[in-house]
Length: 164
Ligand code: FES
Ligand code: FES
Image (cartoon, rainbow, N blue to C red; front, side):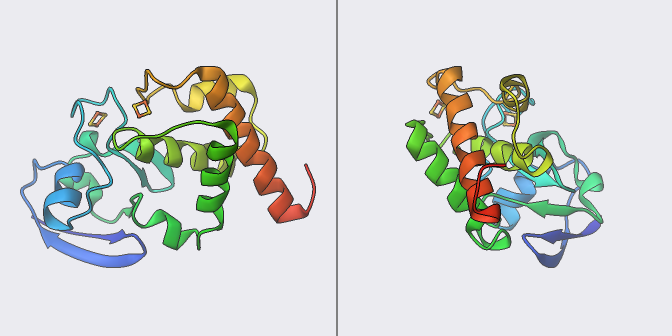
């Protein structure tokens, strides 16, 4: 089948097997390696992408669902956000001392962005809920809450010159 979709802001079309998953299309056909092939069964979040405005696990999206969609990968996110949103997150994580690694970075960054795009000042509960689909045993949940809160503060200052 041929599918057409918007990938990181550009119209693309490609011929694929109907059963292939989006993560394979991204990695194999577009050489976008930011979505990692982790568990490949929806449990780890290493393959996270933004799909029609929501963070989803690309290993769970079959090709037929990709047709007509908008996909943003971690490679496209800094460009599409013109770096401001991306920089907010990197700075917030750094201030809170939260590490990322090749396995979890994509999921963490996209999860923060989705959380803050819906709730500028998320509560502790909302932050933990926003990360529940991501597996990282090396980050203390308190540190993660601090990182998201720091990012929210940075963003509010950038946008409004004050804390909201
Ligand atoms: S690789 Fe998709 S959730 Fe783990
Ligand atoms: S820091 Fe990457 S999995 Fe924990």
